[in-house]
Length: 412
Image: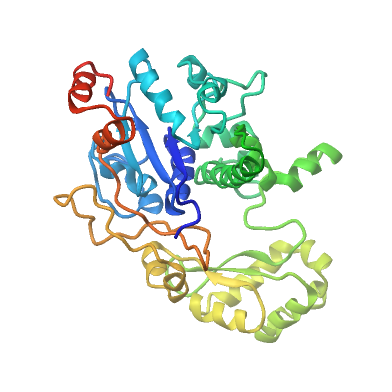
């Protein structure tokens, strides 16, 4: 049985950070109820016909914006209800759900839930055991950034992370995946486990205010402290590291083939030189000397690696005790033996039988591998409002006439 079985979560997540946290919880056994609006599309906005995101949710092909498959894998295994929280009747229904829930998660700006009369204090007034976790851009603490609304790339720029992307002396700004979202989701998951443990001991819930930008700053701790202590701007380093050389991505035989190689000590450098004797030069004998001559060092390594197939050379380097691995495109990754051994995420998450997953389904698995209580992909992606009758009827006890009246009024 998954470890979070019996936990009920109300999931207001949208885009990536919030839905990913809900996905973690669903994979680990929680009953996650996705909250959507009856009068507009809401939820995960990544995907759809303009931007299918196979790397996040699986290969869905091109889907229309209102197709539930545009939610990709992030809402798999969840239940879905619609409710108009701006309507007093919808708010009353929602608070009745809160009475029977354990967790409320959201990643709006801090003004949204209070503006609906659904702040943590409002929720705790009807359920003192409720845990509310909010993943806003900069947190709910009073300050000039409190109500900023950001998207992944703009949030990374706000916290200075963009200044570290790219190559030295390259004036062109470089973009990366908006990975503040998954980083914040993972931090939020651990914080939520701590809050659950606290509730087990005390019987009380709490409000977790997680600033996505601040949660991600730990990844830039070294350049941040260098600036604060030394007033030194690290700037972009490309693939290099501050204290390791060589540390880079080098060309291999073939078109656009590359492999990453890292040397962490003089002992590892000697192992590399045993495979490539031409690198065994006095000017590169120590880490300090290699760090001071990285341009020439990288050119020499690149001239050597070009003669080898990337995977073959990576295996040779690994056998010698060196960190090395080829860069893989999606096709190579899918047939890689190491990846296949780790992956247990093959499942058809089709929302409807008439809309099959193109070419089968491969979806992001759970990042935690638990031997006794393993995570599992619990079910398909729900259609919007698919579980209205179950939640409002079975859980809240509304009969069919009452539910129909609420539908006619646009409340659900």
